[in-house]
Image (cartoon, rainbow, N blue to C red; front, side, top):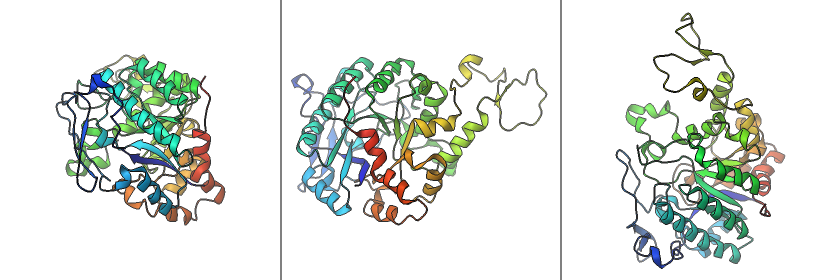
Length: 389
């Protein structure tokens, strides 16, 4: 059994279930003679955020008919040798984001979910459903999550970050306490949350502004900063049963990130106004002239060593070609990783989609028991049918 935990799909009817009241605002698609998406017109699109650099649709992988038509997609998966697939939206094409007017965004998310629910009923042995929710409306997002669970979905898909209108840099989830009721309900429902970049037009997530002169090799991605905020904000202590799957980022960043977080965990804060300026390298500074928040706001809230959350609450989809994969499995345990192809995308991981099964099978540094967990065991544990609380 092989389960693909990161794939992308956009059925042509994705916005046909929004209701007549949204007919003038909903996205509409243009198709060429081959049945491939060429453009999207979205009258309800939010006003552009100054400084942002959105990617235009249709997006990577759009030349594969399997991105839109389920019968052809299933034939591709038969060739790939993969039994089940978890459906993410083709996120550039659907133009969904948390910047859209809340009610319109809720209607868009629900229409996607209705479209996918119809496919889940037709192909229950092949497809696993991930539901969209509009987090800008917390009560609506909770209601949509509950509806999704009742209608056969196994997980909810979130952006890795929380975009805002005020500036072109998205906020980390840990900064938005108004979202806590959503995370609380996800824990009660025992429904995993998959974190994936959503095309919302903010610069950092999809196009690092530090790419000038190669400085992106130093700057952390926004999604990684948001991931850290789930730990340091105390969210994972408030909701210790929650499961979060961080997708399409590989594993090479995990070890150095966890090691750095552990190195500063519970270290004494240094205030240079009262301390000699002795050399220190693993400290957090409370320099009076630079601190812009209170000491209480500045301090991390997590109760456990950060790496504990990587082994308990956080899961990651893999890139089979990464040389760091076996080391990450050894350090954090095979239980924290899920097999993925990123079908049909053409990014470095996506280009490997027709070799991923072969490459992972040939990895001699991961034992058979670990491979079974990554092939399907972890996904089955996270995504098996659940009963609403």
